[in-house]
Amino acid sequence: SAIGEQTILHVEKIIDETLAHSSEEGACCSMDALYVLWFCSRRTLYRRSDIENYALHKISEIKKYYHEDTGGFSFYLHRANSRIYGAKVTRGKDEPDLHGTVLYVWGLIMIAEILGLQNGNYHQPIT
Picture 1: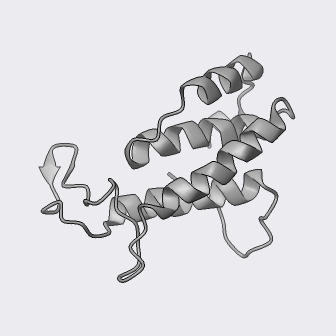
Picture 2: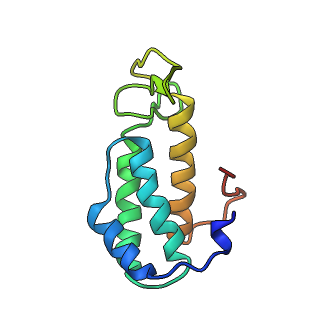
């Protein structure tokens, strides 16, 4: 990605702010914070244990969105994402949806990389 080749200034400050204000409300907010920490942790060891603890906590959070009976994740807790960019895509039932599944699987891949568990045969999705 283009940002992957850029030099980011003040990585430590970005980590501090993200850890202080990370959100756990829905897939986008949750994955935004995780992405920032994943990206920054690849450039510094600053607050490494805090980032790893955050990643471990994130696993239990993501698990709440998983629908074991049918497989997949829902975008929101107990309901599917009903609209994307204003377009109605589901009825918002308590079921998994494509958007939540893609984001949370991507999040689990970032967590595996943060924790050094990337021995599997997978690749970061291109988004």
